[in-house]
Amino acid sequence: MVHDHRLRPLERRVLSLSEAGLDDAEIGRRFRHSPEWAARVRALSAIPRPSGHQLRGDVLRPLERRVLRWRAAGADPEDFSTRFRRSPDFLRRVEALAQYRLRPPEDSD
Image: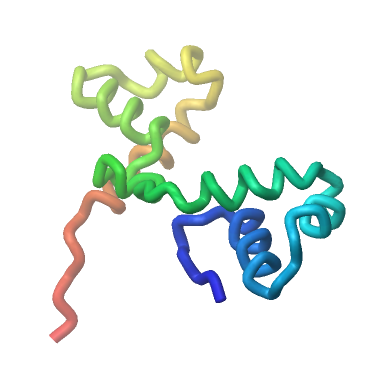
């Protein structure tokens, strides 16, 4: 059974159907695609790739990084809220969440 967390659900399903003995024509039919599509999905899912944010080792979303960068430059949320098309209160909440995510885990002794 395929349990690689880096694969997309579709890729895991195609691989599990293939491991169950279904041919590419049947897999393609089930997904309303061609047999060649099923073969491509199997081939591409075999290529190793890192998962999402682990690629950069970053825990912040792009919006959170940008808000922190603006705040580090001394700008107030009122100054750049129109650029993000969000309210200053929303940007303050984004900043607070980003600060929380960057906080080191506390020891629970």
